[in-house]
Image 1 (tube, rainbow, N blue to C red):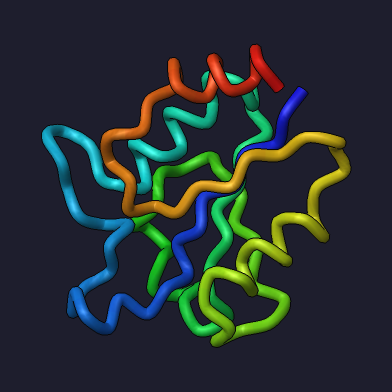
Image 2: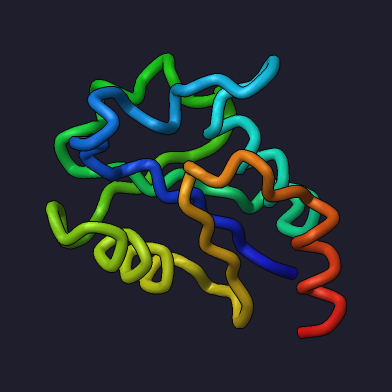
Length: 115
């Protein structure tokens, strides 16, 4: 059993808009990432959000997936990774940044198979 974590807490300063809310086809980046992780994580998928983003993300992230807040805000991806590691109770976890729209559940299933 894996836990899956999608990092959505970045500032997106170069992009100018929240990357997790960008659309590729009929899904947002956050929807794509969480959907891919659910392939191996069952229902144990979480969004890691920045401390200052909890209000911003309400209504923009897919419903039904719990949000956890960065333990160390403003520390870039490493803060989100630490938060996911501290939160998980499983031996195996998968952490994915939200801005990888081409990652698929099949890739994660293959990684789990060879792990």
